[in-house]
Image (cartoon, rainbow, N blue to C red):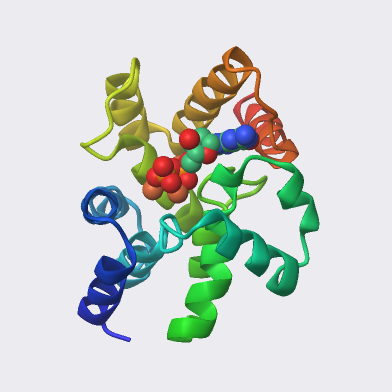
Length: 188
Ligand code: DGI
Ligand code: FE
Ligand code: FE
Ligand code: FE
């Protein structure tokens, strides 16, 4: 499918503000990818456009997909904020015939990361965090880190997220912690 068709389908699936976020993630990701050899702009664009495809789905629709189409029922025990990413990967596979596992993984793991992420997964993860619409304490530091050290940028972002979840007294999804642990090992 052409990128313009994917954009149109995504626009119809998302609330306007979420679609605007998606466009900014696409621009940010393409910009980051330009500095990285061997990363196809086309793949970056497709993954970015589709990364939040199911973000505006009702909770019940997401949980039904998890029950019937995903082999990870554990997800249902954790925050529903996590669900749109793995569900999104399966939905775009069946709806648009996306078969590129790297693109699907970039969508699937854009919220938690995972150990040993591919370059595409890292670019989508961090573009989502630093797109120009984001404003939180430390975002400018993250923007410059994203350009100089992807692993350090993702680690710093996960530290922010984990601290935020702790402050709110929320559960932390184990994969989020595993991603952080794995990144710490790459930096020693
Ligand atoms: O979809 P976006 O808002 O663009 O961003 P996202 O998919 O990266 O994050 C969605 C939310 O998920 C965000 O508010 C923080 C939350 N989150 C990330 N990791 C975890 C988490 N929530 C819980 N409970 N546990 C996690 O490990
Ligand atoms: Fe998301
Ligand atoms: Fe994210
Ligand atoms: Fe997003």
